[in-house]
Amino acid sequence: MPEVKERWMPNMKADRMADNEEPAELRAKDFRPVDKGFTVEMAQAEAQRCLRCKKPLCVEGCPVNINIPAFIQKIYEGKYGEGLDIIHEQSLLPAICGRVCPQETQCEGVCVRGRRGKPVAIGQLERFLGDRSELAGAPKMKAKNGKKVAIIGSGPAGIACAGELARNGFDVTIFEAFFTAGGVLVYGIPEFRLPKKIVKREIDGLKKLGVTFEYNSVMGRLANAQELLDEKGFDALFVGTGAGLPKFLNIPGENLPNVFFANEYLTRANLMQANNFPTFDTPTKHGRNVVVFGGGNVAMDAVRTAKRLGAKRAIIAYRRTEEEMPARKAELHHAKAEGVEVMPLVAPVEFIAGDDGCVCGVKVQKMQLGEPDESGRRRPIPIEGALETIACDVAISAIGTNANPFAKLIGGMELNKWGYITADEDGRTSNPRIWAGGDIVTGAATVILAMGAGKRAAASITKTLLAS
Image (cartoon, rainbow, N blue to C red; front, side, top):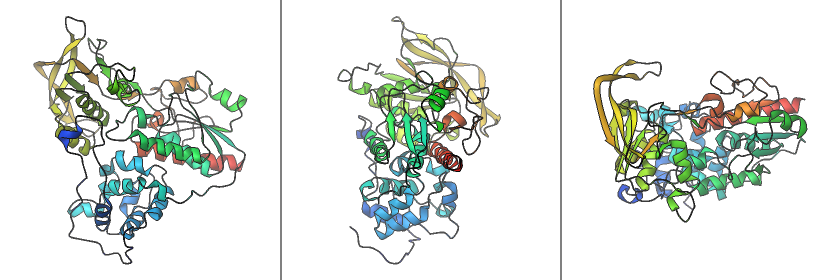
């Protein structure tokens, strides 16, 4: 254990500690984690860069308002268990959030040190503590209150809600459609970004809090909201089913063999271990020439997975330029370092079949950027007559998702015209006994935003049920 330091002396001259990454030429060949995390020496050196601002903007920038300067000071002092306890007051998933949250647009994006240099590596420091979960103190648990809450979906919103409710004395049951818990954390995010053992450890922590998991339970088919509330005796219901229905490109050839939607492709590799075929009986096409359409984190995950599955040429094709890509800059950097090719300003117009009936190429329309649209990014405009054909034996669409249709099957609450659940800031739906949060309310967003929604819903459920 490092020597405990008594006095805080910010290091004003130190530059941000570089990430501790595996060499790109090695990691691109398998699913080993890209980032090995800070060592003790790296974490303490980075912690000393924190200014301990009187008005810490980083806390305001965090969707769950973690006391960031306080846990960083504990790292500096070598009191890792105490630092982890500070995080756990607001978040039960630091090992996950430290790895996958877009810190550059949240806590680090408003870090004062970033105004004249590089911000403090808050995500790396959060992960540093999260990976030392054995040092955390026992969670503070309130006495059982006799109330039961059902949660549908074990993704970030569901497990955040469950953890808060369990600590407040509720009996919590999570109904999960898959055979394992974690939602998008296990089916959507590859092993090289988020090892499954990390997710399992966090789920096991919820079980220790008394949360019950019911797997292979497709709510809306096995039971709807009315049955859960009126027949099975639950006092409240939280819906966190996510938004995993793929958006279609609606172009010719989209139904050809080896044209995948990103969620399907990633689920086969991440959850069903298609990369270990035939040891695991999940076949998928390991393409030699793979093109992925999209510019977000899911597109990055898909193209980097294709690279690890043996693609000689892995392309991410986007209708705007790199500057407009919504993916984390770190993910784009990692992808390019691993040999992924970026093809900007193109949009697919037709998938082409080969002699075997499978996709063998895709015709793309070249684009140019016009005036900004409602997103604030410049609108892509087709260049008349500028068409090109890209050879490929696997094509993946990663242009976004729509609302999970199970929200409608669960019933009992108002949906908007796109099929998302209508809920207020506290997660309250049109039904006073049902709350909702995460992507099924907001549309596709981030892990930490879904967690924040789960936490707010848990607070509202607690207040409502204990007042009745």
